Length: 218
Image (cartoon, rainbow, N blue to C red; front, side, top):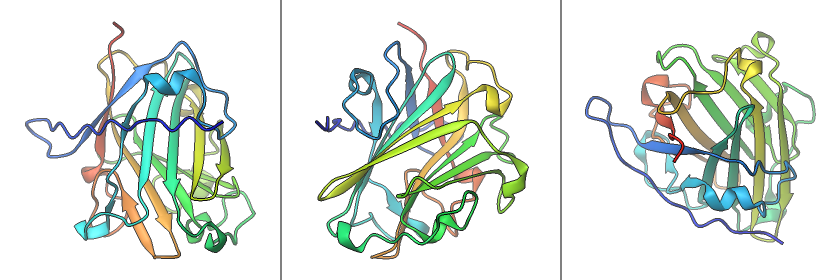
């Protein structure tokens, strides 16, 4: 059974950066990576929606919801991608590190050093074909240790991702640590390229990434 997580949109901005923020809560109930968002841990998660089209051209018609959690080993990301014509989903790439961005897909950007320069980038199309890199168009630069699973429904597809911190040469983030971060989607039936934190020309604009804040434990 699909548990449709109620989104909590956080649009708090820091004084020096006009970008949205998302709190990432630590979980002791890590989700099973099966694409079905019925895990108890997701009930704890903060989420965002209102994905904006490139260049600020309004909200995407086919909206997305996204959520994050973490534990000592992994960052977890979930998407709900609304799609009124699941029969017209585009899937053409079936090769790891292929041109998956020409398919209906989701993307995650992680500027773990928060320097607006170097960032990890992962993509999965709806067929669970993975692409990963550091920076842009450099698939040889990183083969990360991460899992993805996708479930399909009549009017949406859902995604679960687990990314190990160790594969990015990181320890567990400290409470209060901030990453540059963005969540994006490509929906090809309507040619919609949308994201949580708005970018102007393409998704690879680390100065315009939002902030992922690892929430202190209560």
